[in-house]
Length: 442
Image (tube, rainbow, N blue to C red; front, side):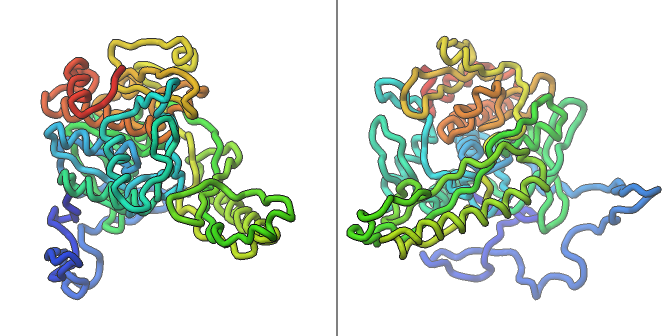
């Protein structure tokens, strides 16, 4: 992995030696930077023209070029980046936060559901399963990891494990970078514009994987999509549950809002359903953030007022709101609940999904659900792939993000290597590549 700056050089702690004794090279210290403006060309500010705010046209610096650009480092994006890299592509991963895992870690949505079907068979395999196996080797990394059961991970262990895998596979990386626009040539996506503390810059790519969850890239590229309202909550963790006084507790009603276990003793994660709201409306998000944090504090005070629970405390509120569904691609193919129930088969199957509690059969995900109808060389991965509203609760869960990310990353790598559009990828070749990387396609 390389942390890339505007010069394309490796960045780190200049001249410092890390804890394991390895030297880390770095960008210059602040004392070595020129005084005045930050590095990069100056640009004119936005202007008020005739009562309207106008941003003058300006040239954007191209800070990097790559074969496959993956935007968003949640479970879909991380697996997409690893799959593409292992297929031989030069891969760049861009993330708006400073960590990997998306809502799985930053949103504290710690349970893994949707990977098993009737008979306790696991159907979501490949690189996502590799992450789970590696978590098993970490003390406190995962609990309930057994056949037919939905396991729960520790967010910090998962952040670390994803980091290790990205480092091992030498994926180029930009953190703290927010995708704000697509670079287009007609109907073809040529890259993405990012905003960061370094300003507005562009990365060019042969293929782009939109793993933002919100479809930020394909929406900016003009791809047809739907914008949906869905439950938005806020997850928290509470601690000291191992210090509850059992004698005092048994004499009173058990309090609500105790949540579910995590790999850390005495710590539970507490989910929140939340109201249906627009997850790409900043005013609505701001209001929800404030309301949810106040409600969480009130809930914990209620728990602490119960006999025996006086030492329970609010350990953490998630730094990310629990946005579940926002923009959804209108793809070449659309997943339907009818298709799931009727066990519909697809010749271009590139992934297989399961059930929340292993209570129904597996269902196939065709390549067409990742592809816009007209826009070229951008693929969707994760919760924003093409599916009807009734499919939201199946599409958005972590194992489905694993497998759709895996398919999108491998497809992007093949398209970049073969010099073709993403929609023209040889599907049998893609299916073989996925199986070679231990994916299950039925």
